[in-house]
Length: 317
Image (tube, rainbow, N blue to C red; front, side, top):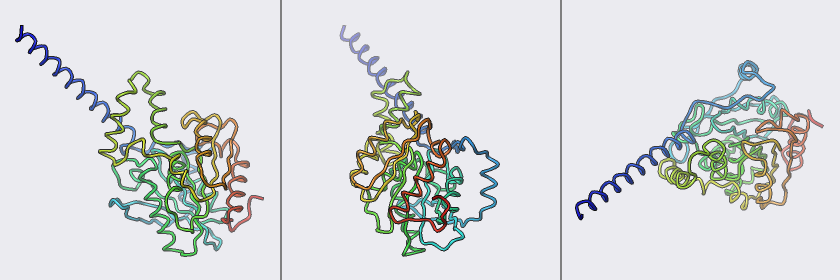
């Protein structure tokens, strides 16, 4: 009898070990697919084509530049200088599994309006080094380095932070840091409340057949061990509670990728009283500027003018 009990215990322990090993293996695979470096998957806006974006890239010269992050990564950026003389800069921050080329048309709008533009590739994207996507949390420190890079070029620079999707979350997470006075305001477009909230939402949408607990918790723990941050700590909402710059929040009410309800949560969390919200009816994820371009850009440039960052060229009245 004792021998039979011992055998049962051994079998049970082996099964538990096998199940745990399988769970860790699956969680590692999900982590790699979520934040591991991958090929560019960003989608061009609905009214653009690959040829149009490439034509813009070839017709507009830019300076390539690099900085080194606090953890030793070589980060790449493009600098587009406007023809007008100005000390106002926009840092345009791209979205998830994308790169700075994917928002060239937005950068063009700023350049044409009379702004200098710095368009960096976020870590683990494009021409920047890195094994894991920062999802805005690690990137907030990189953006601080890019801010200081611009100030090194122009000590009198007025700097605006602008980001879309993951870039919008990056802007919000950066806003809670100790920013130099050169940073005058920010615009976030369809950013999420936290990495935890966004990945939890995506898991329910794409992996509903998997148990949320404990897999999601294990993935977050593995992220902390391998990438240096947990999903819970990477919070736009928490950072916005420390925000001290004016911010414009933009979201399409048909967005189901970063769900629309996150807009209000982000807006309410912002501690700075100088804030504004733009809801674009019918716009899906990152499509607000193509669904209602006049409303979008008039609102953006009016906001920048209001808070001390006018463009050198008066295109939008």
